[in-house]
Length: 105
Image (cartoon, one colour):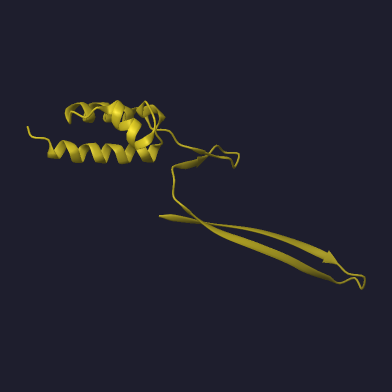
């Protein structure tokens, strides 16, 4: 899903005959949705993987016989699931579940 952000600026310009005219501009941009949240001051930050996600990643990787360290390094360039974003952790859990379904019992 994408998000549309529009930023606008307007300025009122006074004229010598006591009239005024306005000048406005706006710019719209589209962004792919990422795991961003605001800290209450309008500043955004990337949300980190939750503790529950980290535990699930370890458990599912173990059951699927996946070398978690090498998978994290090759797919995400990180050494620990704690370094993943919320979205990356969610995607990894789904991928590991898919491998778990393919692993013979």
